[in-house]
Image (cartoon, rainbow, N blue to C red; front, side, top):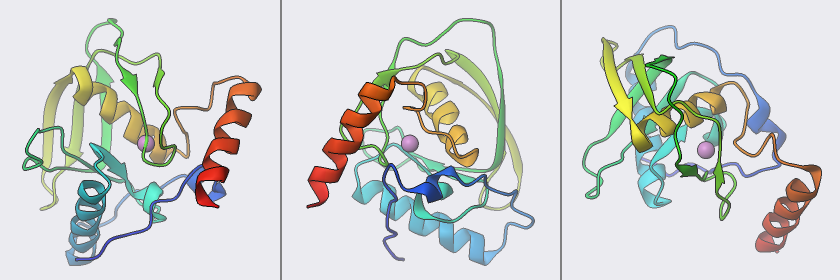
Length: 165
Ligand code: NI
């Protein structure tokens, strides 16, 4: 197991579009393990491979209090269930300290492969639904702050830049 470096905004590598995983092999399973370890260490609930500079369609999540229910999403996609929108704010390990309310579906149906390469379907609502939509955006090179005003983005850049010095 190994901790991976989490890229932070405005790192241009976060803009990479991830490619599908061709085969769920031991190499992919190792990456999944490392991503889970990295996510737990950072106290996150979700992490996309893009955020650790691996550009394949892999996401890990764990929304449990005890951090003992890891979920693995390989080549994930989703479809909305109904039109209802979520009212939950979201944050991101790549943009630490900022939270926003985005236009997200409140309920979705997730279709993905697990760490054995087996396809599963899962209905998600609440935080799980928002998290899936957020993480899948990462795989497209998108960030949850992309639609904020220039002013707000400048403030975020300034704050994140300061933290590093
Ligand atoms: Ni994120």
